[in-house]
Image 1: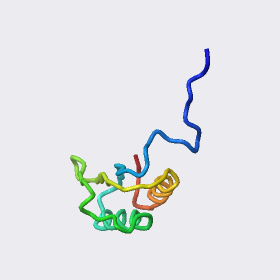
Image 2: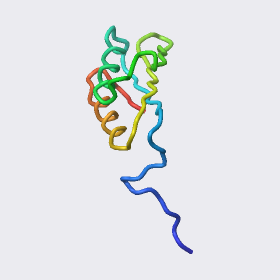
Image 3: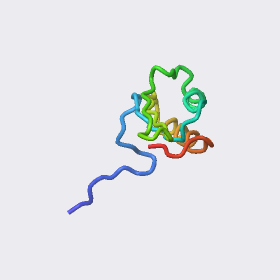
Image 4: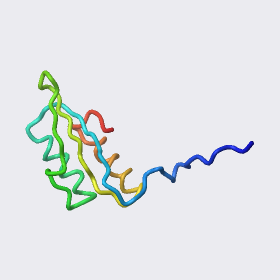
Length: 94
């Protein structure tokens, strides 16, 4: 019996190009949405805040942004994740 073909590190199950949702979480801060928008625009200049769904935590301490990002390749998606996780206002990126 042969092993199933599993994706390698360079392969992905995502078909590019596509709109890909990225969830970004951090403490509530006046500039959080603007900073996340700027970070994504560094990789996709057409990204705009109308592509963000915003939710606050029940106690208002945290803010969650679901950003619908147009990506053309896995390396581009990986770079966006790296940029977001490196941002000082960001706690978690999913």
